[in-house]
Amino acid sequence: MNMMSDFDEYIRQGEPDKKEKGVIWQTAIGLQQVDGLKPSAYLIKTAIQNIEGDITLEEVKKRIDAYYKKQVKRDDDNRTEEADKVSARIAEILSEKTFTFSPLEYINIHRRLFIGIFKFAGKIRDYNITKAEWVLDGETVFYSSAPLINETLAYDFREEKNFKYKGLTKQEQIEHVAKFISGLWQIHAFGEGNTRTTAVFTIKYLRSFGYKVENMPFAQHSWYFRNALVRANYNNYEKNVYATMKYLNRFFENLLFGGNNILKNRELHIHFIAPENTGVINSVKDMSLEKQNDPVNQNKFGVNDDRFRTKFSVKFSVNQEKMLSLIENKPTITANEMAKLLGISERAVHKNLAKFKELNVITRIGSDKTGHWEIVKNGGYGE
Image (cartoon, rainbow, N blue to C red; front, side, top):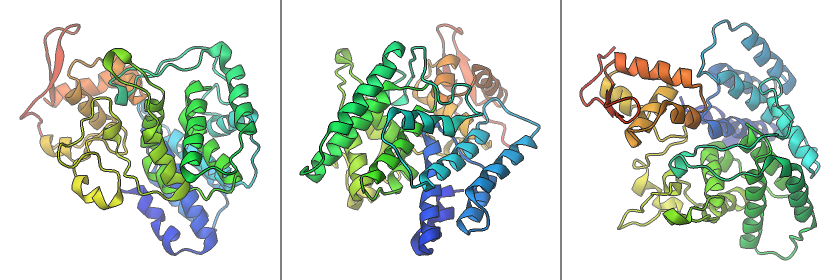
């Protein structure tokens, strides 16, 4: 089910109020893709009731809270509750016509989005972190040192507040906004939820400037947004990889001025090689040339939903499909690496690996320490 299509009719033909709500909900739900999350059908149903004017956003939040209080069974790798609650909270924040440009506003957005979900909601991290990134083959961006976060935040906000946009060309505006947001994200003020917080702050900030922020880039390409931020902040001279703003600039051109750049995740991978004849496709008119040839989709790890289930006649969960894609791309990958990349527990990874072996989908070649995984060519028992 394409959840975005549930709101298309409101956006295309709806009354102004319904159109605005449809755009907001589409953006709120699309932003969950940043962490590979997918809201429930119940959230979609409740959101539509809000768009129709039957219930308020406050009532949406109450219904979602009540819905999950009734849930008895919880799964280690099921983060649907987080996706539903955070989507509703993003919709609420984006509906408000208030904004203050300050670190406190930024921190407060994090608190409002994740209170009751993360213990550290609205708190600056006091520990250093690394994040294994698919786009970097498991490497990490270097984030701000914990003791310097407050000072760095204050400096970036001060510099941006003093910056004058008057007289800038569109391209100069794009490049400056991209640079500011890239620096803000790289500080990584929060242990988790950093990108969604930055995205919501970005939308509110740009709207306060009078920009008519397009919803499609965040609604449909939030994972590209995150990968572009990663590429804007990663250098590895030994591997001949250098930080580049070009991908983030493409995103912001679409966001601010309705640009037609095609945003393909695979092009951001550090080992991506453009097709010899066509080159890198960047415009809408070229979309059809590679529409069916992009191994990285909006679900974060490039899983074709039907590929593995068709091959093995087995219905896999979203995370199971992502695991198989990771194994296919890096047979030596460890359970710990998969857990970090997918944002699930290592226990959940081992549980899925055991299921794969039971279904004859994968096999282990060699020892646990030095061996590798192999996807069985003609495996699977079927349903």
